Image (cartoon, rainbow, N blue to C red):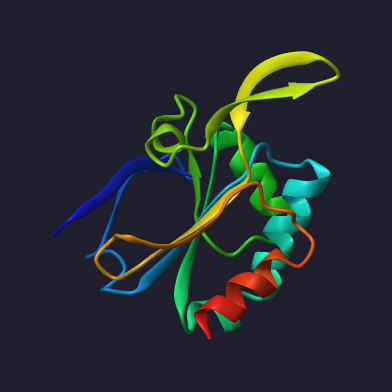
Length: 146
């Protein structure tokens, strides 16, 4: 078993995301900045709405630095049907190089660079999208997986 990462899911359970958990399937690992914000909500809902088409090719997992409590509300508010990983110490974000310095209204801060990774059945990065634009992104992922 090759561990990809350990994390806490939206129910507060310590979990290991490993190849054994997903029986050799590909994984769509997407990082987003914040629950219940317009872009992040749209992205999550796009994954939700296309989950049947996606899961025939890969499993979807969302990651943000939000708390488990925030993830629970986010899932409930939008009927999300895939795991959300809480990464408050941004260990996973740092591992994938998506914890970046950002700037808004002249103020610099650290945060998630919206990114998506396709991991092959061996846990290697097969494809990555950085600085993702939400509109049409899930279609890009589907096109790649086809």
